[in-house]
Length: 257
Length: 347
Image 1 (cartoon, helix red, strand yellow):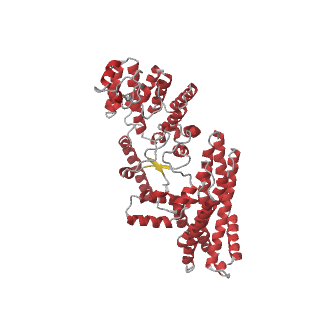
Image 2: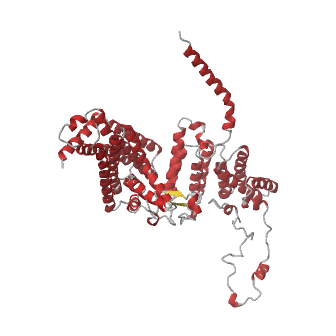
Image 3: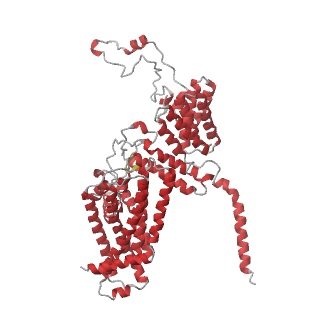
């Protein structure tokens, strides 16, 4: 295990992100959240608590997904484009270390951005006397797990294609996979056995991002989920991210740079 | 000086201008004047031109969210035609008082129950992490809780007619005079933004007739709605639903106020517009009353070989002592309120 190497690489991604002023994007998104909250406050929030929580969860989920996709799909191609990859690989680290360290760094950046946005959103909700509930804490944990999966998928795609193409594909998956899965569920019972096998296969390989979104529960006053649910989500995030990074590494380890 | 590019630019620009001017007359053919149907109706309104699309999308989104909150966050979907053909039925609901707001007989939860979900652990996880419960015979959140959202959507997009009408329906569920006045105020505010709305005139007329029993004012609004419908070349589904109620209410109000000629005229027109509507047809040609004395009724109801052993209740729960018009109307239009199968307001 090369924890020191991975940590140094991850730290480099975070510093690069700060240097590149990525967090300005967070600031702008945060400003949008506060401006939206201000507009809602201007209208009056009495009776709109559920709506405010729902809106907060939706906006937070959308903005953090955008951040995860952009960071994840850019981190590797930029190393190649800026030729900073060569001095890195000249050091005694493997390509797997590089990929994994970058993944950890990209995940950290995404989590930092998410937590900053979540802090601003919590502030906006607190201004409207919406209390913090246990399920909201679970929402944050589950969302962070989901963001790590998005980063892993985006990074893997960026190994196979350009950064722009990877970002586009990742956006399609991030915002479309839930819809595709629902379509599969709807169509399953009326499909032929052959198609049912295809549907099961598609369901298995598509990233199940929707599972990590507890926003609906948090907004509509449902209680916290049981511990096994969070455990299962963590296990799925670990397995799926590992699978994605493995695929990415299989490509990257023999890739001519 | 090379004049060739200048010449080509001038010629092509002129061709564009002339072409544009010539096809201008086709506008009426391509997009005939009239009220566009459905949600498009408010997309083209002048006051929404600046932020129109955003406002329209926002109000439509709020409309969907309202339905979501009424179901405690459980996402519902309509059954597809294929599912309906296969005999699949909706989950239905245990509280029927909200049918004017929504009808769940053809709706199911988006996330199916475990027995209809092939995904195994993924399905279990989604049911655990989402707002999900078995929705068969479900209840709804109090629609009053959704009122601020209706207010928000009419504020964001005043041309969103369902926002006004549904909000007034929700308010009018409270039987107090205060609630009635509040509902009427809301509808009138909607009417100031949408003076040509058939649905708003119809709702006001219906409330005035059913709750305040102000037949004269009710007829004014219902006739206004009828005139608007005649003036329009095309009516969308919401307008047609409202117009159907307009004819029914006008028929009943003219009948009750003794204006026989007006009743016949308006119902004859209604039958032309809605030839399949049994209520309008029956209002136009009411069945002959079966008015018989109590003795005659009992004589007819009693079988020839009546004995004490067969002395069971032939009334089937009906109290024949009360003033019952016996028109055997399966739609139960004994009074104004019951004629509207899809509305709450009764007298």
